[in-house]
Amino acid sequence: MRITLDRRWRVLLRRHGPGSAIWRRRFAMGLGAISIGLVALLFAWLADQASHYFDLFANRFRWAPLLGTPSAFAAIAWLTRRIAPEATGSGIPQVIAAAGNPKRIAQHLISLKVALWKCVSTIAGLLVGASVGREGPTVQISAAILGWYARLFRTPMRASMLIAGGAAGVAAAFNTPLAGVTFAIEELADAYEQRVALLVMTTIVIAGIVSLGLAGNYVYFGEVSQTLTVSAVLRIAPVAGVAGGLAGGLFARAMLGLSASRDRWLPVFRDRPVWWALFCGIIVAGLGVATGLTWGTGYSSARAIIDGTNAPYWFGPAKFLTTLATALSGLPGGIFAPSLATGAGLGTLLRCIFPSDPGSAIVLLGLVAYFTGVVRAPLTAVIIVVEATASRGLILPLFLSAIIAHMVSSFVCKERLYHGLAQRWRTEAPS
Image 1 (cartoon, one colour):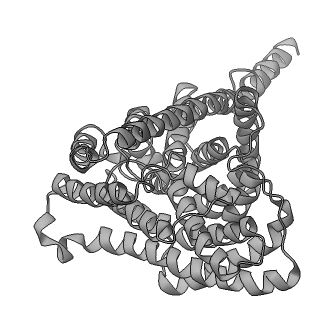
Image 2: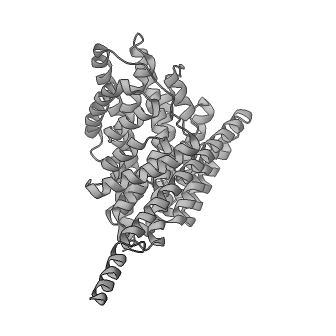
Image 3: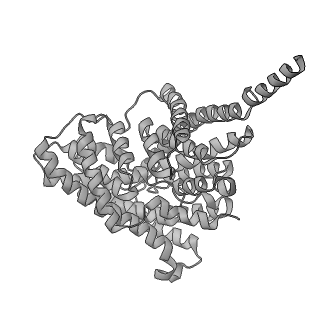
C-alpha cells in the first residue's frame, strides 16, 4: 500500500510539480513576458534617440543625406543579407509564417540572432533617415524572446507561444494592451482558440505591467477629447473610409506587386539587391531633403497634426512614397508608425474639406482609415488609435471609417499585406 502511494505521489509530482511540462511552459511564458517588456522599452528609447540624432544631423547638414542615406541603405541591405536575411522587412510576416509551422521554420525565422540584428539594423535605418517604424520589428523580436525561453525550459514550440510573444510586442510598443489582443486575433492567429486567448492575455498583462512600471501610463499620441455629432459622422466617416481604403489598398498592392515582379519590371536590378537598396535610398533622401518632414517614423509630425498643427498638403503623399521606398528596399524595419503618419497626412487633407468640424477628430478618422486600408485589420487599427489617443468618444466613428476602408481596400488589393508577404518566408524556409 505504501509503495502504491509513493508511486502515485511521484506520478503527480512529475505531471504537476515545478519540473512538469505545464510549469516549464508557465516559467517560459512569465520570464519571457518580463523580458519582452524590458526589451521593448529599451528598443523604443534607442529608436527615439536614433531619430533625434538624425534630425539634428539633417538640420545642420541639409544636403549630406543625399549621399549618406542611399549609401547607408546599400550597406544595411548588404549586411542584412550576409548576417541575417530573415530580418528583412517588417518582421510580422516572419512571425505569421513561423506560427503556421512552428516546428519546421520557427528557429529559422525567429531566433535571437535574427532578433539582435533586427534591433541593430532598424536603429541603424532610423539613424540615416529611413521611413521605418519599430513596432513590426518589436513583434519579431518579442516572438524570438519567447521562443528562446521555450527552448531554454524544454517546452514544445507552439504557434500559441509565437502569437503571444508577437502580440505582447505590439502591446508594449504602443502601450496598448487591448490592441495586442486584437492584433493576435486579426493578424497572427488563423484560428482563435481559448488556450491561445489565455496565453496571449497573460503574456500581455505581464509585459504591460513591466512597461507601465518603468515608462508610466503615457498616451502614445497624446489625449484627444474632441467628438463628432451624428450628422458630422455621417458626412465625414464615409469620405475618410473611401479615401483611406483607396490609398492604403494602393500601398499594399504596390508592396506586394513590386516585391513579386520587380525583376520583370526593373530588370536592371535583377539579382542586385544592394543596388536596389541604393536606388530606394536615393528616393528617400531626395524626398527627405526636399521636404524636411518625411524622415524616420513620422511620429512627431503625426502627433503635431493630431494636436492641430497645420501640415503641408503634400505631407501625406510624400510620406507614402518614402515609406514605400524604404519598405521595398529590403531594410529591416516596420511600417506601423510611418503608416500612421501617412494617415495623419490624409487627415490633413480631410480637415480642409470639412473646415467647420473638429480638426483632431477628422485627422483620427483619416488615420485609422488609411492604416486599415494598408493592413486590413480594422479592429486592431481602431483599438490602437483609441488607446494611443484616449479618444473613446470617437470609437463608433472610427469603426465606421475602418469598416468602409476595409471594404474599399479589399477591392484595390485582394490579398492582405502581411499574409501576402508571409508567403515568401513559407516558401524560402528550409525543409
